[in-house]
Length: 360
Image (cartoon, rainbow, N blue to C red; front, top):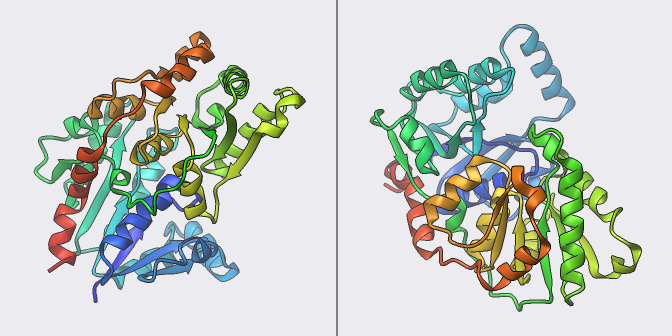
């Protein structure tokens, strides 16, 4: 049985955790290793072929602290990886130009396992401004065995490399559980804009979500505010919205917080009538479950995919949110559905090259 090291964003973000789920379920006869907080043993307990190596025990934290001082960051993780047959870096927004991007670049460079295959799956590239940012990663990408981006824009940046491919977002292929009976509520997935390096939008964003929620409630639909990642401010954002909604509407409002309840969270979306999606994967999962979706696009990664799939429904970019009227969102109940069956098939192409190593 082959052993594969998974590098992923392990901060209890639903989208990233779904990446891990889909990867492991595709290869049931492969042993996957993930260096992650110990609670991931609970979060992924139904996946039998993954081993969680806790990275938050006192011993591991102590070793990593000392290794950082000696310029050998993530020493324990890298030692574990050397005993694997290959590695997969899987995730979405893995290549954003931040102030300390050189440090993040070195960490990714150190993920390579000498003389062993390395795969990058599911990502988009950017946003970035510094041309050197793109050129540095272009050199690093030459060392990867296979790279499959999830959007045309990112593919076009590196199309002259012979190991670059593109497929629809990995989560389009998510296996749906038994069809749920639709209930009388909508889901609003929430972010905290300032946590996404979008300054000066928190208040207008909260106000607009307040107005939208009230508009739907007054038309006999309940509202569930959903957090995809508490540590990125989603829960805080929900509280900030709810506190400015008049108390008379409170019995029509629920909160759903994702952390260790993946199937429950998917079920909440599956049973809803409509999804208002600020989170990228709220948009994708909504489409997978055949829900009309109104995207509030906070990043080009959302508009890039909206264009790639040919979505013709209404949506708005966060920068234009002040122009949004609740009636437009409400009317999208009847206009914002899309058939993503083709994307579900195409999304499996992310694993085309990895299949050659793990399905022999």
